[in-house]
Image (cartoon, rainbow, N blue to C red; front, top):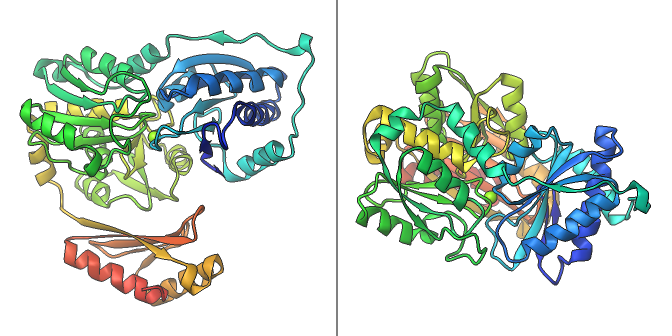
Length: 455
Ligand code: MG
């Protein structure tokens, strides 16, 4: 499976060492071309899946064979790879991960010199190289040496600690339950939480890649974390996904609060610490961040098309100091341009400390919304060709409202919105709706689906 976010496959079937080496060779040739260097530095990391070491060795071979100087980071969080690409001023990086997919899957993410996915046109170009095997294996004397850097985790944690005031958090001696789902984030998170003086109850801490539960950090997969957080009388529970770019939160009563709150609470603390600032979020993210911005005169929210690289791009353009996505992804450019669960943990704990109130009471202070996500099947209405007319009908039907067409169609009212967006990989259109309550959200979803002609 190839897309702008990288390549994924089932290990031993579609994803073999040969495929990994050739994909890495294509990426390596792309880095050479982009950087204008014969021997560009490329950081290579992997998550904790059992197939990671094998695929990483194959990728390293592919990169070195086309002239890249590989710095092997070992098992790291995806954002840690971003940190190290910056530190080594690398041309880019590869991370062997299938994010939240089950452990029989693995994949390769190609990162640019900012640590994010290159723009779609560049990825297309790189994929063409991969499919056409347009890369040149160099002779023996032209192969540069590879090296290891075992300080990646320290570097990442130190950056996070430098970006906040750790003292108020240390004073609180918070008890925190953390579920690292046997992924890549456990060791770095432990290092950070230790440095913040937290008492840690660590579930599934070992980076075995044998996931103790379905790894996507959603409510149904985090029942153990929720129970444990309540039983331990902890300040909160945190859950990372296997490559630790996303963070989900459980409140002090053991209630899963939903991933949308990760960015909101992190943004709140950023506004408290730094004052009014520019922020960015994708078009499918809750409008709670807009409510926050409204409370802090001078703060602004810049909306972007869905995708981490798009958020990062908008953040650069508007000098935003925080941004992210509603799936628990928080970006702090002073750490890295990649969504980072460590930054989110530090900010949320900072907010708990500075407000001196539990998570549930902070949540109560925010406007409450209901969000509904639906998949509308295109099969019955003519498949992908129907997308254009569908979007046009919706734009027409709601032309009285604020309409944004940068990524599908988003329609905004003062207290609710709807976002209709065709999938890149499946013949469906995603509909996301947010309104002040469940009934209003259902009604709005119905209204938009009817306007689209696929109710
Ligand atoms: Mg992930």
